[in-house]
Structure formats: structure tokens, C-alpha cells
Image (cartoon, rainbow, N blue to C red):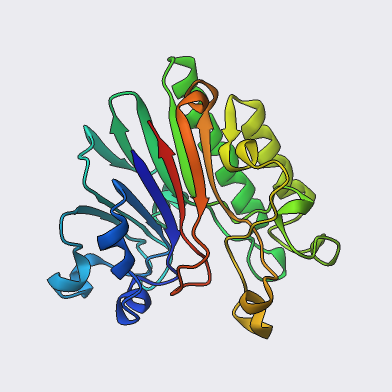
Amino acid sequence: MKITTWNVNGYRAVVKKQALDWVKDYQPDVLCLQEIKGRPEQFPEEQREIPGYQSFWNPAARPGYSGTAVFYRVEPQEITTGIGVEEFDAEGRVIRLRYPDYFLYNVYFPNGGEENQRVPFKLEFYARLLDVIDEHHQKGENVIITGDFNTAHNEIDLARPKENEKNTGFLPEERVWIDKYLAHGLVDVFRHLYPNAVRYTWWTYRMHAREKNIGWRLDYFLVSESLVPRVDDVIIMDEIMGSDHCPVTLIIH
């Protein structure tokens, strides 16, 4: 099973750039997109579909903002949205796909916002989603959480940690939530496989940051501990252009 996540920073933008063409050759079994910033009916059919895939969209109520979508070749048993809190669910941040032996969560975690104004909202989202994941684990169910976490966990996960200690995405109160998720039976499988690798998944559009590789690792796969032996690889696809994020793929047997 090949599962790919990508924050596209606007579905319309990647379609215009033909930045999804690689999907036809790479053929992930599930493609999880975040920050689609649109509704499917806004796009012609040939743009909103990928040959060989079915799709499900969870746009935000607010036009041109947030939202998630999934394209899949392997059909899930069930698709649901949200985490049961209206203020989060109105932003289209969560799609859950049920497969026989795990639940796959495609998640666009909130950004802390200008001057860190939305950090409390972001932390409340982390807390609520973790409650949902705990319920799965209490039932003996496995989960895979993927998407844009909007937080770099440790200093190795961004190019300039000291300069960003007071900026959202690397605040201590944000980073501790990644610790909490890992303490609740989840594993960051990229870091598990590559403990010393310096790799990033997001670069600001300013100051030629991507060319200079001044980036952050914000896009993750967290999987239940019992699934870790089945993980073959996690691939950061930083050669794929079209967004300020790059895709990341989990290969699990």
C-alpha cells in the first residue's frame, strides 16, 4: 500500500501548473491532499478527477480556505469527515478512511496564524484529535495519521531552530503536542527509519528558501506502534514542485 500526502496550497494552483501529472506515473494507492482551498464543483470534471482514481472532498465552509481531499485507487470500507467539533469541522480539516486493518486520517492541522493569534485554536485541535485517536487504541484499532501538522517537532526538523523559537510552528507549547502523540502509542515513522536525516517538506516562497534548502519538516506519517513492523519506507519527495510543500509517501505492506 502506497499512501502519499501533499499540502497543495490551492488545488487550482497545482492544476494550472500541471503539478499533479506525476501521480499518473507514481500511482499511489491513496493520495491525501490538504489546503485545497476550493470545492469540487468549482473545477471542470477533467481537472477535479485523476484517471484511475475516485475522489472525496471535504472543503471548508469559508470559500478559498483550508479543506482536504482524497483520491484513491484502493476503495475504503467507509469515508467520514471531521472530529465532532463544529468550529474545527467547518474548516474541512479531517477526512477518515476505513480500511480492513487501520483507519487512515488525512489531516490539515491549523496554523498558529499571524502573531500567533490562532495558537490556542491549534492546540485545542491537537487535543481533540488525540482524544479521537485514543478511542481507537482503546478499542484495539490501528491508525495512520498523515498530513500537514504545521509543527516542526525537534531542532533537526527545521533549518533555523534558534531563529524560530518564538514563531508558530516551533513554539514549545506546539512541539510538546507531537511528544504527546508519540506517548500515546504513535510513531513518527520517518524519524524512526531515519533518526539523523536532515530533510524538509516545506519552504517559504520568500528569499529563495527552497533553492537554499532553508526548510521545515511539517508533513508526517504517525502510525500505531503495532503497524511499525509493516512499514517499508517513508519517502520525502522534494523533487516534486508545484507547492510550498512537497509530497511524502508511506509504503506499508
